[in-house]
Length: 221
Ligand SMILES: Cc1cc2nc3c(=O)[nH]c(=O)nc-3n(C[C@H](O)[C@H](O)[C@H](O)COP(=O)(O)O)c2cc1C
Image 1 (spheres, rainbow, N blue to C red):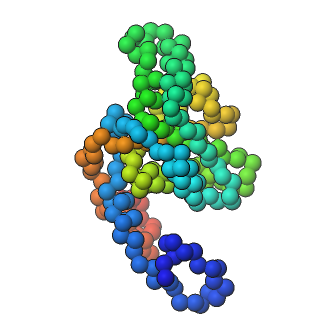
Image 2: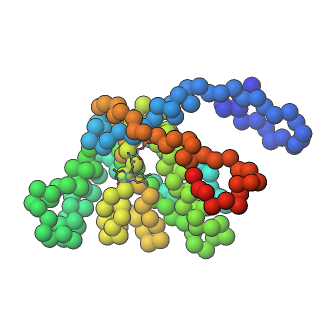
Image 3: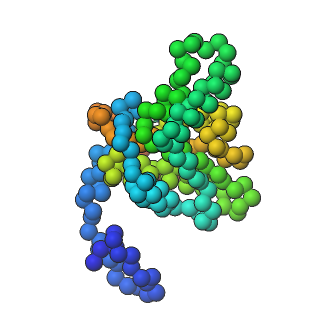
């Protein structure tokens, strides 16, 4: 019996024996090896339309308090990359009239590097009973689900949040509406190389175990 692939019917009996589901080693190995690669090392071909649909379905399978769907995705691929890039460059030049001439196609080059960029948009509903913080965290979770799903499909990713996601005028060109905020540009492509891993946090720095004695202390990890 494996609930990874076969969801169990809802259990009415809370005293039923727990399912002892075996570990999915391939999934664990993927998460152990996954890392970002620098955007400049990404290349095509990008995901096929079927792969993109599957990717987005997996990204949307994300914890979401109150089922508010407080996020959405904008796909940038193909000729949309240079079309949007040109518009961003024009806006950037207008905002920065002293910019060096060599930078005039900076954002087009930026968007052309990866075959697919997914713009992750946070759209919390401030009127909802669910705290906005919970809604924003859900957007981050959707980004991580997308990143892991893309890795599992053989792609590499880099999650960046630069001027086009931060500047309100630029974000509007990307398609972001009032009340929405860009949580990241998740660039997806084939890795030309696997970058060396970066140092990972020492667990002692980030993991503590609650005990009654320590709960009054000010020591944070
Ligand atoms: C919301 C968010 C925004 C980021 N923006 C940038 C950025 O603008 N520039 C940058 O160099 N890295 C940025 N990063 C970090 C990169 O994604 C980095 O490659 C990543 O943290 C490497 O971790 P990984 O190997 O575990 O994927 C950002 C990360 C997150 C979560």
